[in-house]
Image 1 (cartoon, rainbow, N blue to C red):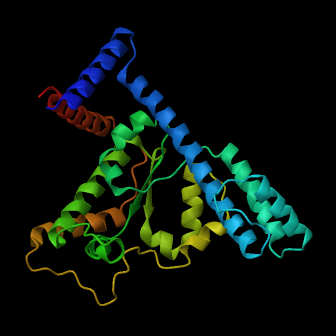
Image 2 (image 1 turned 180 degrees about the vertical axis):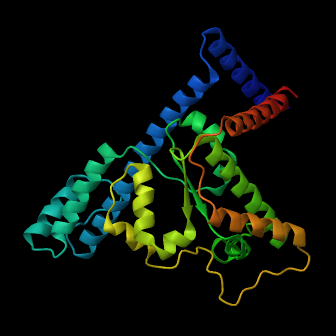
Image 3 (image 1 turned 135 degrees about the vertical axis):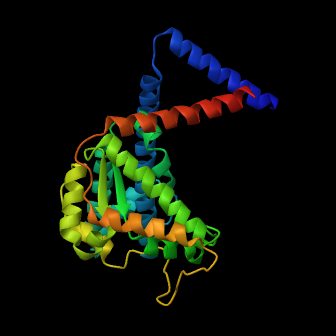
Length: 296
């Protein structure tokens, strides 16, 4: 262990000792840390959205000859003056431009949540709930064959391979789905929502209405615009087949059985204390493992 890591470990132990001495539980500490992270992300996300909008406005004004300055993303006096001049000159997009700027200013004050779609979160729902007790989780269920084909073609858009081969893809699907199913049992339908991909594509409006009810958000027809194109980020070729002979057939059968079972059975409506305890024990083991590494 190098000097820098030793210092970090010592500092972490010191903080935990202080918290324990003051009667501050780990859950309280995590939730307070989560609130700080949440506020930080929301603030900077709003700032980033506003900056991107101002950059677009400055470029438009610059192209039209109203803004001589640099495209910085800062809404300074020169940008404000250029907007007014553009409006006086009867710019065709003036009203939309002003509305967008007003909306951005309003959103920065009223946004209360952010969204992330990292698949690895499937394995860390327990820890995330400690950081963000009010977090809501969406488990998007899709037939395993389509998911495997998508993972095997991930490199077409990302330039890197998500999995090494078909067998690894099936194993990854099983691990993530089982983790999400266990979270459904442990935390119930008020915290975890199962959304079937087939419903999202085939019955988009009712699927989105139900999802937004879960999130406590109002429905808008504009939500359907994001589904106007096929939902498949890996752009799997129509003739692509995933039938590697080296893949364990028992593994494939296991995954397919679970895939069919999920499609045919509803999400549990009651919380399972046993499942919650199982997840909590797993989280405790992982944190103890990390602590042992620190002490090594």
